[in-house]
Image: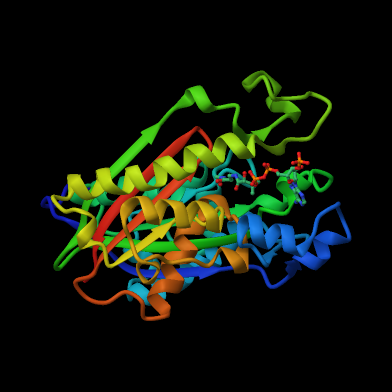
Amino acid sequence: MEMNDIRRAGILGTGSYVPEKVLTNADLEQMVDTSDEWIRARTGIRERRTVEPGTTTASLAAAAGKRALEAAGVTADDIDMVIVATCTPDSIAPSTACVVQDLLGIKRAGAFDLAAGCSGFVYAGAVASQLIAGGMCRYVLVIGAEVLTRFVDWTDRNTCVLFGDGAGAAVFGPAAAGGVLGADLGSDGGGRDMLGIFGGQFTGASRVGDAALRAQIRMDGKEVFKFAVQVAGESALRALKAAGKDEAAIDLYIPHQANYRIIKAAAKRIGLTPDKVFVNVEKYGNTSGASVGIALDEAVREGKIGRGDTVVLTGFGAGLTWASLVVEWE
Ligand code: UT7
């Protein structure tokens, strides 16, 4: 690739796509010993989306990516790199990004998947902004996409009520003004057994794995909750510091949509009023690597982000990982 001048990257357009099929809390009451009341009180979730047979992570990702390209006003030919953040790829190899690149008719781009659990979309945004800032790419399509319902243990009420499917995308490109001003990326592999997709052929990877099972989502909810409440706020503040700003600068905070209680506690730590925090967990549940991308797109389309606004994106999840980006909207 030809190296261009060093420049700051911004987000030029966003898109998202969720499957049509809705799984409500009432539906889950028929499947496990739970209640709509418990799920809403403990998580804020009312419903989530699930794919039909035949729908893949790549097809959700491509649908979201297409909308982001349209919103950004760039064509498939403009894209230099496709990054798909996912922990539920359709196959280990080839990458889901290669399938998306083909589905969207993107001919002259590199493509790879990025694995950072629920922090994936924000991690991918950080990578994209540096590919652009360093001059290696001009336009990068970042997509977070998950089909988590294929990895849910539908007999485990601790986890099956939490997750849903979907995809969120953004086109990163040269910023005319503002753009990505700061980032915070982190991990603590010591917490690797707390949350993840374990089992099946991946038994060697973790103590939690069980050869007799297919790969399934396992989580120590209480421990992850404590981690999430702490890191979601701290990571946002570190990214703001890197951007030379503080919490007073935030116009909109878009955290990973895992649980309304986590979001509320993180916002309180940062000192944000509810109007500065974007929440849509009630509609989609936890869509892992897709959630920040879906939330960002909804915030843009609902007119919640204006020119010059400072937006903070924060992800946290399996790894353990966390990531924040500070973006000044153009
Ligand atoms: O995406 C990456 C990040 N992931 C997260 O951030 C998730 C973090 N964790 C959480 O959001 C919360 O820990 C959960 C929502 C998963 C659980 O909430 P909690 O307040 O931590 O509940 P708990 O695990 O302490 O469980 C309380 C009780 C237990 O019963 P006992 O042992 O007190 O009798 C559970 O068995 O609630 C029970 N329970 C349920 N009851 C009805 C657990 N799941 C359910 C359920 N329906 N679905």
